[in-house]
Length: 534
Ligand code: MLT
View (cartoon, rainbow, N blue to C red):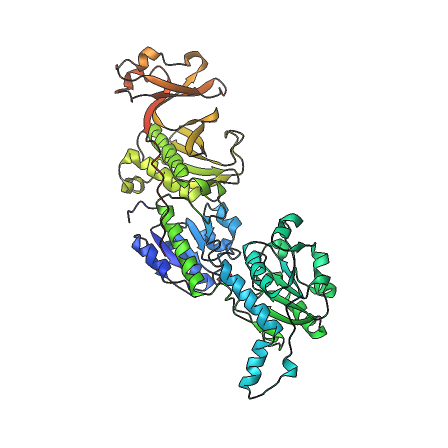
């Protein structure tokens, strides 16, 4: 693995299928596996790594992200990402990823298994047999056929549960705030608002994320509206259910039984709940099948490998802008870095570079873009070591808005280079697969101008706006193919001239305008095919 890759060293902090480390190592990424670290240990360890791969046992809180100065990506080897503080990760320019879909069917299968075993008292019967008993009447269950199953959350897992439970000829009702009645009907589900779900359901199964809106959703007031003798199944997240309310409902007989794979605290210490005779408890193993674990592990590992190759991100949670065209964003950062370095001429301990994302959709991408900018800066230095040796300081940040972006672009980036009393700020974005330059020192190019080919930049005032064409073609080979002029700010504006070939020598014409510089931006490479292994 080249020293210049984004991800050189990755920590795996939870039990994850070995194929994950194998794929990463095969691609040249160094991997450490440290399972069961305490919060303080993780806080210390995290500083050494570019990437983290975790499951539900690791909590990546704001204080951990605060000190994770090298971290560029945190990837959840599963679906939920609630144990990563996404807001804090975005603030620090860290990409958060997951492995969407890889364990969906396994979690759905676990849910269906829990429904069946719960209503037929199978765990109780098993325990009774092992105790040498032969009880029959006491272990009478209920039939699923004709009963009403309420599926709360009609996303991927909920839908897989529905498909499977239909085979039991159940009446399926459901709720999801972003699914319409018509969409639900197509899934074979009658949609009701929550208050109409509770009194109708014989069995309620939850398939919701852990978000503030779902916190403590199944509580005393909900049980008070439920049918006497209903069943509750939760293989989603423990925080959705108030455990004390479940215990009360079990005692009152409102809830005949609960099957719980997830708990408010994990590992749970709620022995009263786990040991309740009408509770089936499993230790968050919904997604734990050999197949799903291989898939999630390979999925996140391949995403890391693809990230190093600038290939499309598939499970990116917090940086929507980078999702579609990672290569173009990389090229944008690289090109802005190249222009910044060309402007200052040489990089030294006096050079400060700030890489900022702007707009909500780019938030979280700052460290990836910093890496691309650094690669652009070193095209002038010629060696990656020299950037550090030269003492160039590159920092990252985020701006909620970016006034110099064309109005239809939701996100972009800004690179500001400062050396002594000289400073240049470059603002850019990606449209389609094209990196666009949107502004130089606040002088905006309407709709942006492409960063491609042989480009000559200069700043001018109203009095010396254009370089005469005769000057540009004075070396006999450079002809102008296009040009773009920015809006005027004060009396200053910037012009970009696209040449068929770079000029041999721009020194003689430097006195005609300010900040004259030329660079060649290579055309975007042909998109590589995403890697797939396992
Ligand atoms: C998930 O959200 O994918 C699972 O709950 C994670 C896990 O199995 O650890």
